[in-house]
Image (tube, rainbow, N blue to C red; front, top):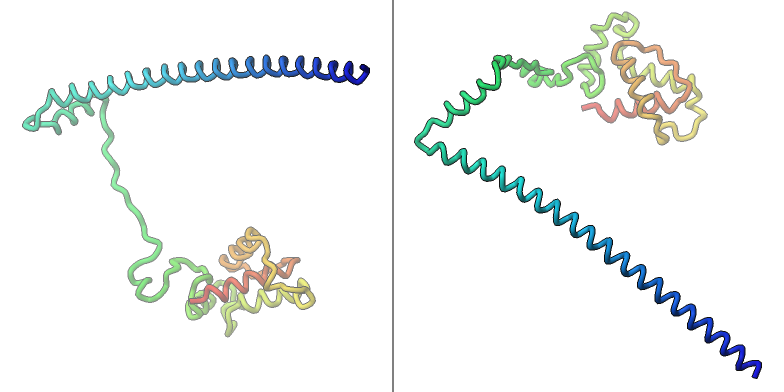
Length: 207
C-alpha cells in the first residue's frame, strides 16, 4: 500500500508538471505567432511605401520623356535647367607633374628623388658623390653598407641570435630608412635587428 501511494503521488506530480509544460508551450507558441504576425505587417507596410515611392519616381521619368521626343533638343533643355540652379564656376585646368620623366625611364632612374632604395649601385654612388657630406662622398663603397654594419656591431649584433631572421618593427625600419635617405648617417639604434633588417631590405631591393 505504501508503494502504491508513492507511485500515485509521483503520477499526480507528473501530470501536474505535464499540464504546466503544455500551458507554457502554448503561451510560447502564441507569443511567437503574434511576433511573426507583427513583423510581417511591418514589412508589408514598408514594402507598400517603397513601392509607391518607386512608382512615383518612375512616373515622373516617364512624364519627362514624353515631353521631349527624339527630335527635340535635349541638350538645350539640360543646359537651361543647370543654369537655373545658379552660376556654374568655370572648371580649372588640372595639371599633374610626373614623378619622373621619359629620359629618367630611359636612363633607368625611376626614383625621381635622391632615395638610395630601389636604385642601382651606380645611382647610389652618384647620389653619394653629390651629397653635402664630404666623408660620405669620398667613400669607394655605398655608405649605407658601412654605416649599418657598424651600427649592428655597436648594438651587440655579433652576439645576438638571428639578427637577419628576427624582423624589427616596420615603423622603426621606416624611420631609419627615411633618416638615411635625407643624408643623416648617424645611426644610434640600441637594437641590432633594426639596422640588420634595413641592410637586408636594401640588398634585396637592388635592381
